Amino acid sequence: MPENRQSIHGEWGSRWAFILAATGSAVGLGNIWRFPYIVGENGGGAFILVYLACILLVGVPVMMAEILLGRHGRQSPINTMRALPGRYGARPAWQTLGWLGVLAGFLVLSFYSVVAGWALAYVPYSAAGTFTGADTQAVEQFFSQLLASPGQLLLWHTLFMALTAGIVSRGVERGLEKGVQLLMPLLFLLLLVMVGYGMGAGAFTEALAYMFTPDFGALSGKAVLVAMGQAFFSMSIGLGAIMAYGSYLSSRSSVPGNTGLIAGADTIVAILAGLAVFPIVLAAGLDPGSGPGLIFVTLSYGFGQMPAGAFFGTLFFLLVSFAALSSAISIMEPATAYLVETRRWRRPWATTAVAGAAWLVGIGSVLSFNAWSGVKLFGLNFQQIMEYLSTSIMLPLGGLLIAVFAGWVLPAQVTAEELSFPAQWGYRLWRGAIRYLVPAAILVIFINSLGLLG
Image (cartoon, rainbow, N blue to C red; front, side, top):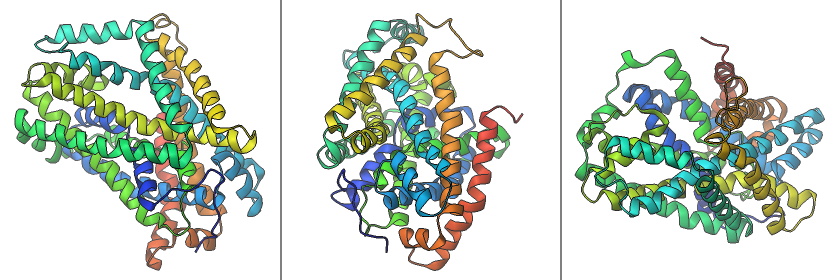
């Protein structure tokens, strides 16, 4: 068993608190917003099968590695990756891994808050019946007007960032743990209500056929890479969040068992999101492959044409907001923990500093949709640059370094003790995957994200 050390920030009150928190980190806009539209863009059922294989073969081993690094180090990702290399005779340059994750999380938080603000904005508008009976042109115009208004985007960006900071500032037990204990059950409940609504009011049979009838003829090489990337990113790997949450995990808690439950819950939420979205979209005769505007334009129009659409549309955007908030608090935590540990700042001050800096950078993303829309570098606006740097470069690079450090630098005895597999063959499978399969798969994602593959 691993040593019984504890983080200065405290410890999760129970195994289930950690599972809820880590699931909340994984379940976010990637599941509720991105997953349905990329399934739509890449042919449905065959894509989902590839996605599930990638979760199992890539996502699960890397998540185990990130949790064990966090629990073994018992500090923020930056300080964990400062301490562990020296302990095991590795180069100090490995501390770059900690900085990379925290910086990636900071950049993601800056634009994530802006997009999450869209979901918050849609809650009162849906409740007021804005989309009831509206045609597609009116719904598209509403979304365009929202993006064209710096004042509105800044308001909702500010509100979302303040909500996130309010939870993180209260610490592990009173903030993070209490927050996810409220948000995650509500998220699952709302998601089940939305699936039930789709069963009754939408084209549910057609949605089932669309999602679970594999058409491998529609599966391209690019779709396989997209599935691999979605599996990797949807589990919050490489952001430092899972490493930070792992540092608060009891030494008695099973890393493989917890990871299996987190990956399972994350996947179930993604599938349920598809079952909530596609019946509405297909019942309205709309295109399920309509891209990033699927929930803000296509789905809003669908709700507007259906019985009690205003009520259920409001519930849906609450669901998206809760999912975004559960992820955002995990992304803000690593930088906050570092300031508390290294600068000895009180947690409320550290949280305010991180939130304030991310909010300022986020203003660039706000203006990317309006005043700065014509300002581009290499064809990308400010928000797209932040997203590309963080999700296409930093995250896969961070995940690759996690796999290499856990598989090649940490002694086998250490990783075996931290993981405590019930059977030796389980550990051998994990070690083989993290040393060979995972680095190769992540390199394929990384090279593709840099545009080096056709």
